[in-house]
Amino acid sequence: MKIGLGLYRNSLNHKNYKFAKQIGTTHIVAHLTNYFSGSNPEISSGDNDGWGVCDNEPIWDKELLEGLKKDLNENQLQLEALENLNPLHWSDVLLDGPNKDKQIEDIKKLIKNMGEVGIPILGYCFSIAGVWGWERGQYARGGAESVALIEGSRDFQKPIPDGMVWNMRYKKGNPNKFVSETSEKEVWERLQYFLDKIIPIAEENNVILAAHPNDPPLPIMRKTARILINPSEYLNLIKMNKSPNNKIELCLGSMQEMQETGLESYVDQFSKEERIGYIHFRNVKGKVPNYIEAFVDEGDINMVNIIKILKKNNYQGVIIPDHTPALNCDAPWHAGMAYAVGYIKGLIQSL
Image (tube, rainbow, N blue to C red; front, top):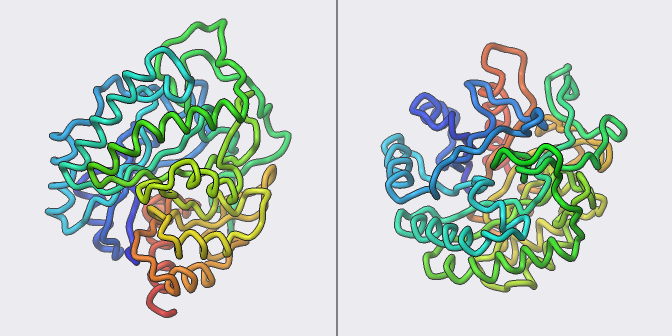
């Protein structure tokens, strides 16, 4: 298995490429959507515009992707995946809006661009409300800043303002309107439409689609149903389209937070069946509706067992820390990532 690092759009620079190489990573998962900016990115639920206003940009073209891959290769790093689509590019796919067919065609173009450039994986999260509901505070060991879901801390059913989806604003919207309530059946049907249209293009271009679970894994958030909120629901995802290009963005923390138990057995099954695109290797304490993100070595997941399972099943993919608690220093994000990568590297080398 290979160790990688996830970099947000504003962190995709030579300084961080050098950092990634120095801490021992070889692969990069790149976020091209403009959330979590700054030299020390902090994850949270965001403000009234959620994670921010979407860049008004065309679908990511071949020139952009080639330039990114070239920069990484020149720094002895490999571009393993793009993680997440710009909500502007698939808002009507998620909301079943009038422009969904046009947006699907644009996503097909992106897949073709990825195939031509040689980017093997597109990670995505099929969610209307997106990542929302977290609180940020000193929740991790030693008072390190982290995120938590706390029952009663806010109204989890606060409606989504018109013009927002996936916890980002993609258009101005009508201040007197809100996103319609959506059932679980409707969301599964929208995912089926997405897979039916995109998987054949992914197969033609040797690109894997890797689905991230919904986080927080609540059945309803902001009056919209959420899917992939229990590990067993990934069996349904695979059943919907049995293509080898239909895989899982296996986020250990998100899956541990879920109501269902048995994380290790699912990791065993999915790695044995080669259904994992790549792994978010992070830890948590608790389950919905109350949990915190913990340091990788202090949560409820037995990370030693996870690495043993992956080695047993000859997992050859990439592991990244995803995000971590922030250490108290001048570079909280970098220190947190270095700590997590060192721990992962130590486990892999010692087991």
